[in-house]
Amino acid sequence: MPLSVLEAVLLASLSYFWVDMRDGPNYFFYFMGILISLEFVGQAFGRVLCAVSRKQVSANSLSSVCLLLFGTVAGFMPSYDAIPPIFQWLSWVTPAAYAFEGV
Image 1 (cartoon, helix red, strand yellow):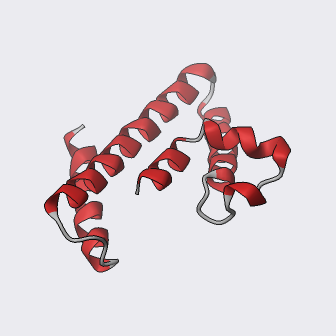
Image 2: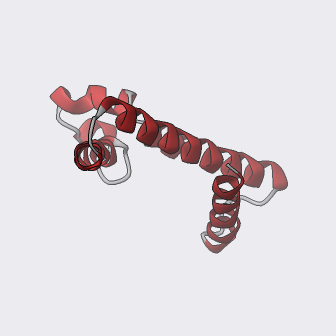
């Protein structure tokens, strides 16, 4: 857990000022909190996939497919309206979509 927080803090410290986001400590700590939360959600999701599958190979394959789907509908590349209606519900269950919206 401390390494995950350290990783998120380093990423937030470098990327926040490099991208030149809003000035103010409250915005920075909000951004850092979102990154720490997304880190923990990703770890929990990986643990759930490991618990559900019997073998490591199937957990890796399942996580790759889930990350591909989540990344596709998270809102980074296509906007919500550009996603086909049959896949729009996936953006409601994607943690990265909420993190992207919060940022």
